[in-house]
Amino acid sequence: MMHRDETPEGLMLEHGIKPTANRILILRSLLAAGRPLSMTEIEIGLESVDKSIISRTLSVFRKHRLLHALADGESVRYEVCHCAEEEEDSDRHVHFHCELCGRTFCIEDLPVPAVRYPAGFEVESVEYMAHGVCPECRGFRSGPGKPEGSVC
Ligand SMILES: [Zn+2]
Ligand SMILES: [Zn+2]
Image (cartoon, rainbow, N blue to C red; front, side):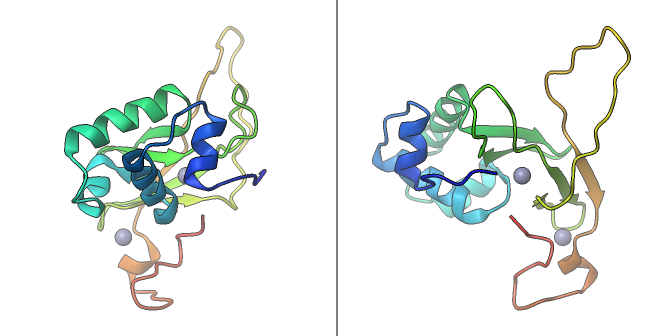
């Protein structure tokens, strides 16, 4: 994975998005979370930003391929795309949805299995979403409030 300018401003400019104060706030909270956030989770973290602005900003980010959207069976979550190439989805990784606390984690270290599809099926995107119970909910605490499974 390539790490270039990962400041909110740098990422937006790279994706052809004009950085505004609200966009910076929203992108910063997604970067800081280190895991995919739902619309509601973003709202809770950004009380000063209007709901409609958040939803409009997320669709701008999506249109410019700055965010991945993923469904975990509970809600749609957004995470910052760290792909080096715009065309190539190089940062696919496994996600884990905790059925108890409802959070979704990025498991970046786990290699995504290479799957061969039958002839004639052209795959455009694949989501690897595991469901279960996260380390924190199972009682393995590595420190106050910091779940062990949150690795990205
Ligand atoms: Zn949990
Ligand atoms: Zn992720």
